[in-house]
Amino acid sequence: MPLHNRLKVYRAELGLNQTELAKLAGVSRQTISLIERGDYAPSVILALKLATICQTTVESIFQYEEEKHETEAL
Amino acid sequence: MSKKKHKKGSTVKKLAFGALLGASFTIGFLSSQEQGLSLPFNLPLNSIAEFITSHILYLQIITSLIFILPSAWMVFRTKQLLKDKPITDEEAEVFDRRVDGKINTIFTLDSIFVILHFLLFGIALDGANPTAAASIIFFIAVLPFVFLLDLQGTNMLKEKDSTKNFHLLSNDFEYEYLNTCDESEKEMIFKTAYSTFVTMKMALLIAFVITLVTKQLFDTGNYPVVLVGMLWLTHTVTYLHNAKKNTPA
Image 1 (cartoon, rainbow over the protein chains, first blue to last red):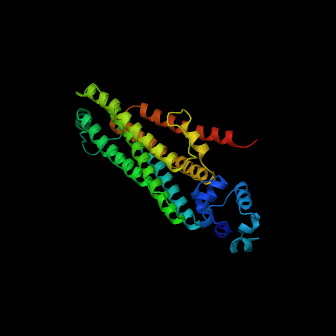
Image 2: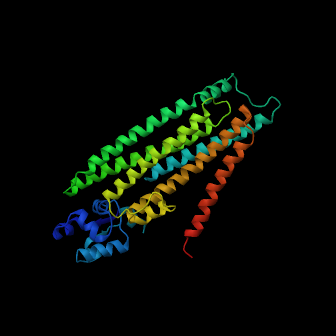
Image 3: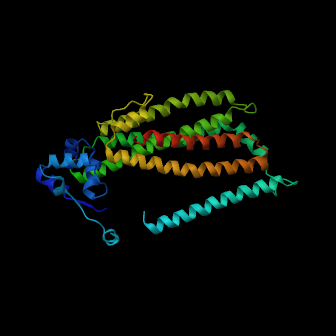
């Protein structure tokens, strides 16, 4: 998946475990785990919620890196 | 899915579809011939059917034991697991996987059992069945146990995740459950539903061809052909209607 994130880093800075962050964001612990592993791309609303909780911007947490073949095709 | 794997899967599907069409045309052609379509050997179907019908009560009892006992054991084991409260993220990951796995097993066993239970009950309703009354009583008596196991499963799901607030007895319980799911759970459900739709398309086509074969070989009549055709039509029309309904204006 071309979406990379530093959610685990920000979560650690806040001293929260996945369950606590999930509760604050209104999602399940599994969703937070999937996002941190890069197996799930959150919706815009969830990304904004997480950014608000982490007191930072969405771009600081999530980075989009196009795959090489997509760049070459363009 | 990688492009290579996707291409291979598409080729297999096309070949399977082609084989089904070929089989249908061959059956159609052979049945239109004077000699019709018949098996090259004698299959004692009547004897097999009689044996199954006269012993259907035993089949019902065996099926119940095969599915209900493991489901009940899973309920017991899951209750034991739920007593542990995970602390770290890794413990929570393992906990969720184990509990979800067991709850899914409970629902899977119960769902398959209910279908088989109804199927055997349908076969039991036969004038040639000497234990028809016992089969009916057994059918009715077992259903509450399955319902209780499902209820235990949903209660354990709610205990694990307090946001899951739905009632098994509610008419819209599937939609109530969907509304309690978060976005990743909904995505998983939608993917699963679509995969099931695609699989059922092929399954109904195969079932249709089988009814054509049985009509010719075993003289089952037009009813199974029409029934499967109607199911196929309902399946497709329902999908198209819901797709239109869910498309934003």
